[in-house]
Amino acid sequence: MLGLIGEAISLRSFSSLWYWIAVLVFWIASTGRVLGISFASVNRAQGGGIALMQLETMTYISAQIWIAGWQKWQVMWVALSAATLVSLSLLAFFYGIELAQALWFLVFPYLMILALQLRLALRILRENTSDDALIQMMHRFRVAVQGIGFIFIFLTAGFAFFHLLIAGYFR
Image (cartoon, rainbow, N blue to C red; front, side):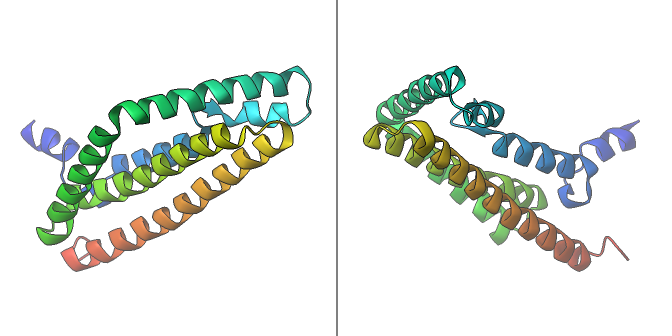
């Protein structure tokens, strides 16, 4: 019984199917939304009409929420992000803890995506974009997130393969 529980809660993340399912779900969820708005809504709005007006309204409300949250809690967000990233980096690459390494490959790109979303929200409100320019900005954001995802999935898989070879799990 304890062996089954130990296998389910194994700290060997890179050899766990659950970790790779979490990576898959993380990247699907990350590329499926722009500022919390479903990308299907963005695609629907490309035709114009009422869907475009609804998208503009949802985008401006979401951007205002992002900026208001940032202005109110920016010191806390930066401190928490820095502390989390530094702690995970030390545990992962100085002490060699595999669970921390696996989490680092999720947390670091997530913080990058959050920074890009904040930048997008600031740009939307500053430039007062609408219509095709707004849709184009949201498409570019999604392509950027997909690029980050591609790079980090490749890096994670490469690091995991190298780690498993070094650790001897394939012997």
